[in-house]
Image 1: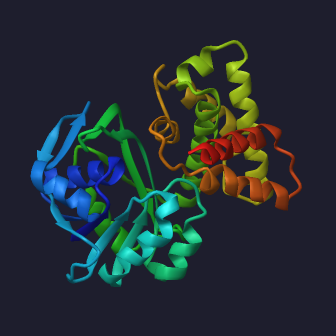
Image 2: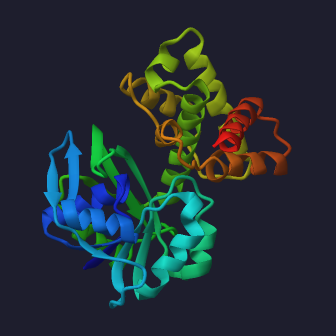
Image 3: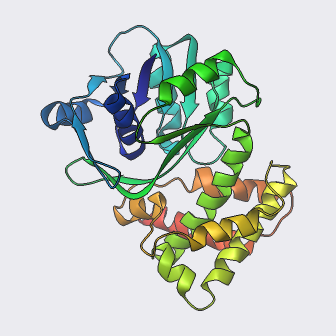
Length: 303
């Protein structure tokens, strides 16, 4: 299958690179400046699971080519509208779009643009780009999850699973992708919220006096909002996620925290902001989430 990866950053560059490493036909849709750098130096992946460097196949939004079979949609939320327009010329009737954005607010605009071409997706990975534009993958987990939004088995999803099999990364087909996405949303909202508020990795926050209680309180607030809008989350999700947080490395940082440290744009409106709107809709106070969100808005004001 012909695969298009939107961008060649920490997520798209890593998972697209692993597919190239396996031998799949992968093209990266990038901006002109990024294209020039990658043509000069190649796409370099530094990973605890094995390094890989290659000369990627690249296109920009002005290039013309036949529609692709799969699009890995790995943009940041604040570039969503622009990214949809950039991808449109490369999407055909049977193209499958796998969004890897955090949260759930992106699904509606994607479905408005591409209809049933959109399935569910998410990733679990700790990556960043260094100053040289190289992908740096710093922890063992590198999982990409995908599945039909209606939770049915289809020929196309099985074909995608076959294409994604056999790589060094973990590509996992799910029959409960909506639940997976909401669970990830809960986790990333909480972790990015506390790490950006405290300006610290998860370890010092978790191990400080009262740290676990603070994390749990934010988890409970977000869970209450999600239950109010009938999100498909497990009954014991808070305990499950507290166990996951206990297993994180001491120096684990969220991508939002890394972006703030670099002075970059953040996805606060897409993640915490969307939940604040839901909290207002269902008349839920959520004081900790409100504090987290206000912190993010102050950061944006000072950029």
